[in-house]
Image (cartoon, rainbow, N blue to C red; front, side, top):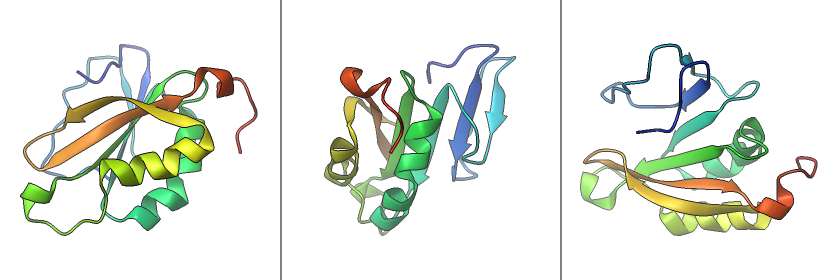
Length: 125
């Protein structure tokens, strides 16, 4: 489901305790935004939190892996100011674009964002 395979590293950052991720055997799971990862899922409620972290998160998956940003759906009844437009507005100026939308569960939705091809081998900002 998440596109991570045995021998790879998955970072699940600020994930709600109620969500369970069924990762394949042999996948190393991280809960902090340090080092590199083959796949990152970052759960966010406030745009300022994403703005503060997006550069670090994107550097974790450089050059060609995916970063998934998840936020609460409006229908969840929980307060949030994050939308797909928020994610795009913060990502695109940094050279990152979305290439897939997904529902995480009944309360969370998300976008998979990746480095533009022409930006994959440039130094991180």
